[in-house]
Length: 441
Image (tube, rainbow, N blue to C red; front, top):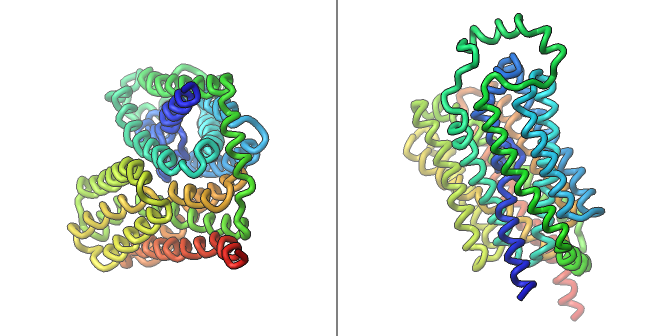
């Protein structure tokens, strides 16, 4: 009875904690802390006497930081207590989140955001490894819950941030064009001496303070689990599964690396260029184009929630196949009818629904054939980070060279083809040892 109650407590804590595991660049799937940057970006730029264009390097720093964090986390997860690692990471994120509104220089703000991204890489990798270690073959529902929490966090954080910020008015009642030059001239001497100072807009402080408090509470839950010695169950489960190793374990990891590369890369590419593509190629109004982003993320979040139920009756392989079919069909529909606004709405909805389950299902499916350690998860997550860096950049270059072609749609369709081809290859490699064993028997 005590063991049953402890497992229920673990599930409750995990679901509460996963809302803050995120890369912060909409992969993603992304969580509450990462997505709050969007609605507060202008306020942060004003706070450091800068502008948005000069702070855009934040996104590059966060992507590189997340990749480094995934790699670091993969090694740390295999040599220290997982609950302690996640609790410490979230505690540091808490402190950094509290300090963000006090940053008065652009360099310090970029460094702070990049450092948080490193910890997000640790948290994202650690969350998946911890779920696989605790539940093993019964982890699909919990992995789907993890990604549903990502989607809900990314959906709610901008709304909560704007409620906290309200109408943004600087303390000196200047407009942005008047305030920035004046601040640069009047406070340049102070800024050169003081790196940290209270923000001009106290609403910005309350927005990040409330978020930091939430993360602090979740970090305390992980410390409580560590003190309860509950990680022994996860370690024993993980050690018991060490013997489960596919004959071509490294080849399987490389295929899943490529699968993550194209899958997450296509997701970020489509959401990044969806608004501009809808206005320039489809001829939609800006309001309609903004609605496309909402319908995409809305269907993705809804299907992520339904996937928690489907995972109880459908195998991870089945969910991956269904996801690949939906992605191929919707992308082909976009290629053929990308000029039609109605078809674009339908295809975007189907595409968002199709992209909801494949990535978490891939982790669950692979756990059936081989053990995913911290290093293995880190390797896979690096692929999920490089894809959103490479594919959108290449798409942007090609779209600029061929402005009349729907390069964005072609890139997503090509990625859907790659993921659809990669999974049968993964299945073939994973089942080779089983077939050899059956022949011997």
